[in-house]
Image 1: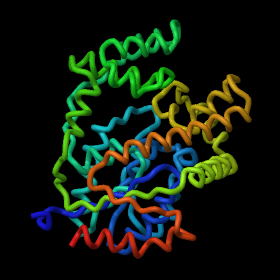
Image 2 (image 1 turned 30 degrees about the horizontal axis):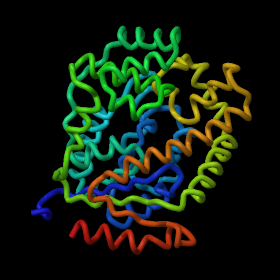
Image 3 (image 1 turned 120 degrees about the vertical axis):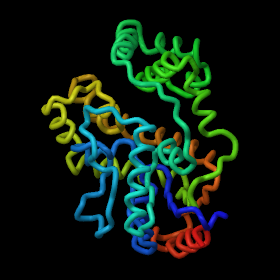
Length: 317
């Protein structure tokens, strides 16, 4: 029966929708420890651009999978799944409820439903060769290579998303099977969660969300995003590293390298973040068992807490 499964709460939603504030209230109400479901908060020194909640503002709620990697280190969905599994067992050992909060849909869903990732390894030489093609012949040529072996992945990836195009090519080369096919098997039809799962999603009117995104970008800049990126580069982090392709970092790098003006970089960051939010929502809409909470009718997020608490209590009964 569902009640015999260990409890797991997960809160998802697009960037800037209000997950952080809600997560602290939920965690304190249900005795949770929070696991970050964000692909970039794992990196030390990348605080402002990832909207990492400072330790002093965590209100005593333990947080996991934050600041566990150096920015030069790779970190995949399979890595997250393994690390999150360890964190869940650790939290359970203290009698607390694990609570995943974040916007990286694949990461969160892989844990909620126990996706089986095919081992594909890492091939630095192949990655370098593919990057050389992108640099010398253009990203469109690299994208065409992917379209030839994995049209489904190519259809989902923009040619300028060189990092993910290379990764899809690498998976296909290592396993002999398209990355899209393996992900399709992972997501599958309806999957049974190994947990007594309470999966909540926050959403709001798109215009309001975009306004909040613009405000968040301005706040990050005021907090010193440019200086954070300068510091990472000065410490020796390559501008081509995976972590520096994150939102906020790649746009600032373009400015610092003279490939755009400051105003252009800010404009690109706002635009890219809006596009990212759209991709997040597209992913979440296909997640089974997700209960959506519309925040538009509430004057503030805390007005929705009773509704959220009732849904979680009902799921975990």
